[in-house]
Length: 129
Image 1: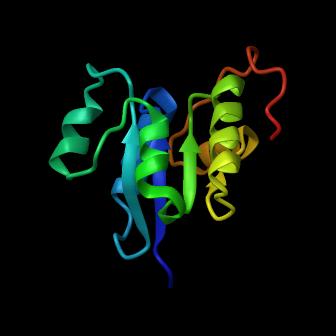
Image 2: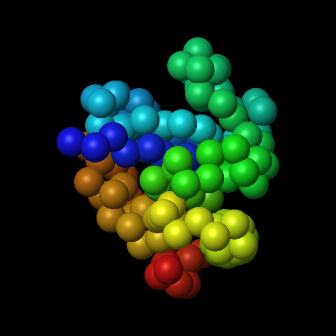
């Protein structure tokens, strides 16, 4: 089985749970190669550092460093403007390999997590791609 490399954008309430889940998976299957968390006071950053995972407060830096080494970008900010900026950066760099997980798939994966609670969705009028 091929290892999947992930760039995590956002380690808040939702991203933090995905980070913890991915971190506990078989390292032969999943590798978090970088995170982009601008809140330097986020308590998960200590764990990120202990695991030797680099944090790029500006996501562009991670895309520049890793390029097509990133299989999946897991952006849990759920900010349409940020997703658009990521798409634009991927397009401008010619990266046709890396997949940006759409918000609707974020929700689907969230529902698969053990003990996941409901996500307030009233502020997201469009959770499509």
